[in-house]
Length: 430
Image 1 (tube, helix red, strand yellow):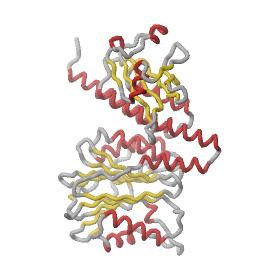
Image 2: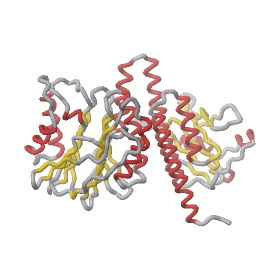
Image 3: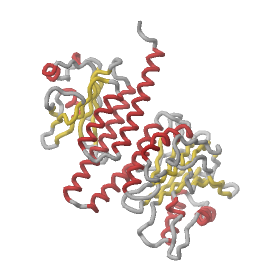
Image 4: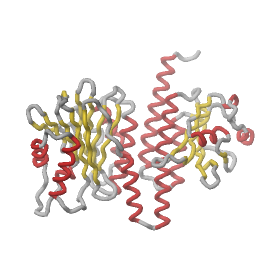
């Protein structure tokens, strides 16, 4: 007897959730892995398990020969498979840089059955996705899974393999760049490369929200940073805004932040409740915070139609809310301990607010308020509040520039002792 549509849907949902958990685990490991062979093996085995299929393979693109070759497969009876661009399913995906979902391999004209004939394996269903570089959109390879055990590959499977390919591309590109730096033995270049990679993780443009203006400033103390901010569209169409800060600065915190970003972006696709999303991120990244590392973070969600603001604050400050009508600045209160302090940390939602015209939200990291001048005087939260109150009529971008200017006056040394992130969200008064 065939299962009912409800059971099939439940099974797909459970498998997809399991696949997302595998993806979270592998992205976390990729951020720490520095061996290319290990990266490829990790991705290939994980994508096979996540899709509940018989086999998976990762083809790398050989720019010199302009073909694709198997670097890692879960099982293979022959030493290597090579495919020219445009040849077979893998070659077509590589040439056109488009995903291909084949429900019946032997009915597909683009499929090459020669490998089946050589190995005795029978290919039934195929899902193949291009792996592209983060920065230049270059072809790096093709990720392929074969024979889903519970039927054909679904739309959810397509989204999942795209996520795997995206993280694989970032890891492969990062590793290739790191190897180039090692060959040249230029440590300074390696650090600058890390900055470029991390900068690419940050939003390149501010999201456009009717009646709102957003402005940001991000500056690392070194070439890489443990600070992070991001915007995502939540499933219920609210705008999600994250600002986070890993304790310390430099390469170690930047790697942790890369993992944090990956988890946040994956989980935010399927979660709208602020406190639940935050709890899942905390639960996922906790095992990777060692040697006293922790993360302070605030996650804010804004509904563009109702202007309701909800948030969760893991001991992050400054997090300020200016009521333009009253001229009062409120703190967005702490609702949990920093991430990494205790496992399975309880997380509560903050006070729900209605954003009125002219109201301003200011989110920053402690590198801004803990900055000290030559007299060892701290910049402090009260100084920041005074600047905001005295210049509250300025648009968000101009206020951001003014705060940055005041910081530079207070601390003229170009080398910052800590990373600084500043984000302003203003509901326009007109």
